[in-house]
Every structure is written in C-alpha cells, then in structure tokens.
Image (cartoon, rainbow, N blue to C red; front, top):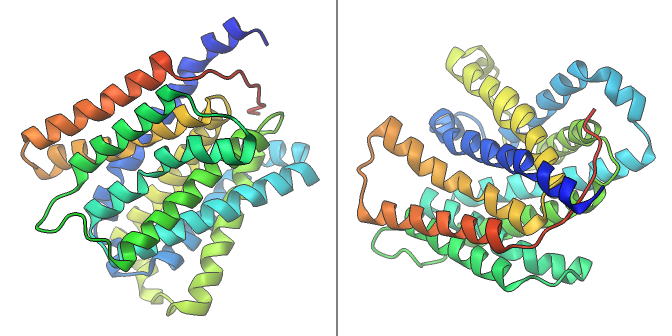
Length: 304
C-alpha cells in the first residue's frame, strides 16, 4: 500500500477511535451506581464473557473461517493485558477518587511512545512527547481537585499500574493485528478478559446475589456495557488502533476523559468553569500537535 493511500485511509480510523472515546466517556452515566451492587471483577467478567458470546454469535462464520493458532495467540495476548488493565484500574477506583482515577489512567498516553521505544525500538518524536505531556496536563486540569489533589493513595498506585497495562495492550495490538482478522481477535480477547476477571472474582470476591439479575435497572446497565461499551467500542477501537500509529491512537483514546466531563455538564449540569475551558483547550491542542506533526505509519489489516 502506498503512503499516499494509507494517509487517505487514516482519517476514518481516527474517527473510530474518537467515537469509542465518546461512548466510553458517556458510560459513567450508566455505571454511576453499578459497583454498589456487584464487585468490579464479577461485573467485568460477566460483561466480557457475554460480549464474547454475542460477537461470536453474530460473526460466527468469520470466526470459524479465520480461527487458527496465530489468531488465538494474538487474542490471548490482548485479552490477558486488557483483562489485567481493566481489573487493576477498577480495583484502584475503590481507594481513590474518580478524578484521580481518570487522571492517572490517562497517563497511558504518556507511557505508549516510550514503551514502544523500549519494546519495538521505535524512537518517540518530539511531537509525540510534547503532545502526550500536554494531553496529560489537560486531563489533569479537568479531573483533579480537592484540598490535597496530589496525594497518592494505594488506589492511585493501582491505577497507575492499570495505565501501564493499557499502554502495553496498545503496543501489543499495533503489532499482532498486522494481517489478522480484527473480529476474530476481538472475540478471543473478550473471552480471555472475562476469564481473567472471573478467576479473580471467584478467588477473591463474594458471589453476586442472584436477585441482581432480575433487576431491570442492572440489566439495562449490563446491556449498555455489553452492546455499546464492549462489543461496539472494542471492535472499532481495535480496528482504529490497528491502522493508526500507537502514540496517536493512545492520544485520541485519552479524549474519553474530555467526553466524560462534557456528559457531566450535559447530564448533571456541572458548571462550565475556566478550569474546564483550560483543560479542554490543552487536550485539543495536544490532538492537533499529534495530528499535524506526529509520526505516520501505514498498515493493512483484515476486518471481515
């Protein structure tokens, strides 16, 4: 594929990543009280197993046609890294504030260029570094607050560890997706992420009450998580990541925090302050730097 054709194809893939970030940013409206009824590991395990079953049923012909050892190995690598990332991030949320959790999770966009350098010998550009740091500062302005915003509790350190695993997963996806079928990878990834979280839940957490699965409100939340946050978002995220340079992909996905603040304003009437305006401006500037100056990469993956 020529570089000119690859660049022509990239904008739709970047738009997919922004769409996923917007849907994830709005998911806090649905998730607001979910963890009061069920532990993170059980919710994540059930969510991802159901997502794997749903996508496997919808795309069963594609899965059976392309399933082989290479896809299984790649899907397991994605599922293990992603499952650990989600689990650790949500465990960290139990001992920190949502603002700290959002801010510290967003550090994966800073980690990606440098992990890519360590693992793949791809040296980050100055634009990568500047854009990542600028995005991090912007998300911090949006998320942090309180009397002691920079105190790092146990949950904060757990969140940072989760951010590391999100960064690793982005690097893994950028390299295992080449020549792979993204739908098959996503289905395997879901099942493995579900197993990782269910194993933790079985060993460390109490079983969720059976009555919970008769609660219409919880079932609505679960349906949103499975159909939108998992199936739709993860599929378009994987397609986007496989066709966008890792540093730019991580930066676009960090817009999740920006969309989260936007939905907070729209749904809950959070006041628009100079802090919010400044934070949005910093993140938007970071995206512009990444898009106009950042590095470029041409890839080719099979979607169906």
